[in-house]
Amino acid sequence: MWIGIVAYTGSLGFTALVTLLYWLYYERIMMAEEAFLTGKFGTAYREWSQEVPPFVPRIGPFRSPSVPFSLRSVFRREYSGWLATVTGFAYVDCLRVFASGQFTGVDSFTACWSYWRLPLGLILAITLLLRTLKRYTRVLNEEGRS
Image 1 (cartoon, rainbow, N blue to C red):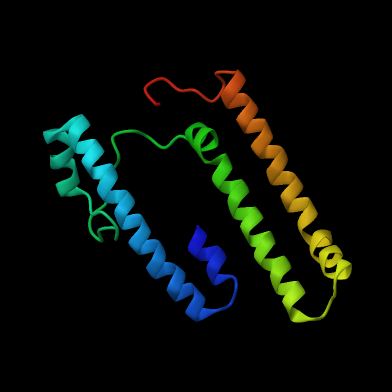
Image 2: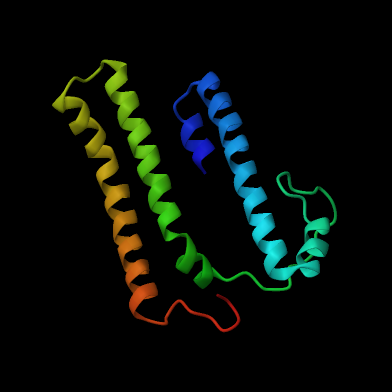
């Protein structure tokens, strides 16, 4: 998700640098998570981790997951990521408009805002709705999912 936003800057060098830094950063997170999960689940986690590649997906026969896909679960868990993605693209796009020199000062903000106000407003409204539903209701909860 973040690499897509970085790639949107149009700079191959910047994209390569951020990809490398992200890889190094995320590798540390993965090691901490593995230690935590090993402590919590022991042998069951170690056996599972032997079957699942840590970074690059395995190319091979598809195995159906034990838990079916749930759009309700996606709505409950991913709304902040959607907001961050749309905001990130809007930010980069506005920087590109400003850097182009086509507009200056308030004109660059106005040019960018006129395009992004609808997507940002829509994703913000969806985010607030889903956050409210998650926090104050059980509409997005499902039996057997945390």
